[in-house]
Structures are given as C-alpha cells and as structure tokens.
Image (cartoon, rainbow, N blue to C red; front, side, top):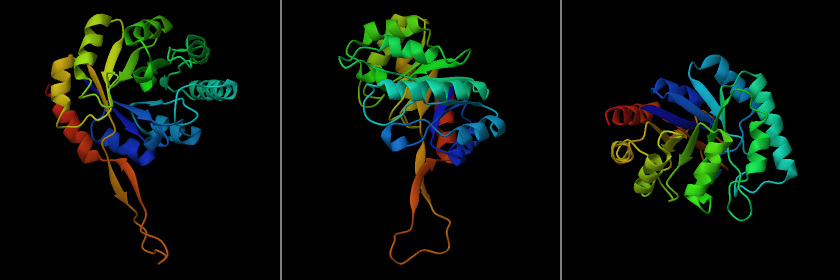
Length: 238
C-alpha cells in the first residue's frame, strides 16, 4: 500500500514525508484542485525530501480544456522538470465533448522522457469512463487518480472497484478526494486499491508577532504531519 499526499508548498511536503507518505503530489493553489508549482519549490523538494515528488502540470484551475498557449506552457514546464531530475508528473486534458484529449496528452508525454505519468482527476469529468481508461492506458500512463466520477472517493468506491477489476493490473487506479483516516480502510478494502491519495490538510496559523489592527490574523491550509500519520496507519492496516 502506497499513500500519496497532495502538498501545496515546501512545508506541506516536509510534513507529508515526516508523516510517512510514500509519494508527494506537489501543487500550488490546492483550493482550485492544484496548479503547477514553481520550479524553485520542486527543486527544493527534489534535493531535500527523500521520496518522489510528482508535480501537477496544470496552468490554471477550472476545466481541463486547454488552448495552444496552455499546451506550450505545460510542455515547457515538463521539459524543465525532466531536466531537473523529477521522477514523475501528473497531467490530464479533455476535449470540449468530454473525451480524453489524446493529441494534447501525447504532446505533453513526449516531453516527459522516462518520468512516470499519472492522469489526474480530469478523468472524473470524462464522458465515457471505461473508454477513457483505455485511452489513458494506451497513452502509457502509470496510474489514474480518481474519485470514481463522484465528488469524493468514498461515494465513488464501488465504481473505483469496478475500474480496478476491469483494468486487471494494466494501470494503477488510485482513489483520491475526500479520503480520510476514518474512511481509507473501507475504501481500500472494497476497491482492493494498492495506492491511495489525500491532502490531509489543516489550518495553519501565522507565527507573526505583529499584526495590523486593520487585518485579521493570517491563516493558510497546510498538510498536517499528525493527520498523515493517522492516514498511513489506517491505509497500511487495510
């Protein structure tokens, strides 16, 4: 069983590692589902965190329909991250009709070299799940991150089970979205998943001593080491 944690900054990535995560999906803008992290952030993580950090390649939040400028930007980032020694990336693209955009995905994968490819939750917005799975397999992706085309993986657990059975080890189907220490074991037991994905974030309060009276004390969401430990313990006991 492998636990992947979505981390939205360096501190979160360190917390994920310290909590026992086996891999990190490195993102910016977690509230928007994740966008491409900076090269500096990835470089620090590669050099200082001894587990794989796979950056999401996504120019913006919202849908997964990309134009020429989006694609060119993502190709550039992939080539840059490849040359930095990154071991894997997380991608996904759809057509306006809800199909996997095979030409765009191929153009991104062509820049990846030997990096592992995860297809992200764009899959959950795809029109025909089983047809889409086959296209993603044919693209050579290593895994699909999915909530089973529901808003969260717990609600989609029975469809995730079906996907795992029908793909028959051709690709890793990794449940994610709404996964917690409380429901991870049930999701794994039902789906027979070998990997699981979560963010395990909590509110982090600023350590600033001085605050202007015109503003509230700043907070942000960050990965919690304690929550990751709980998830890892639950997932690996399944």
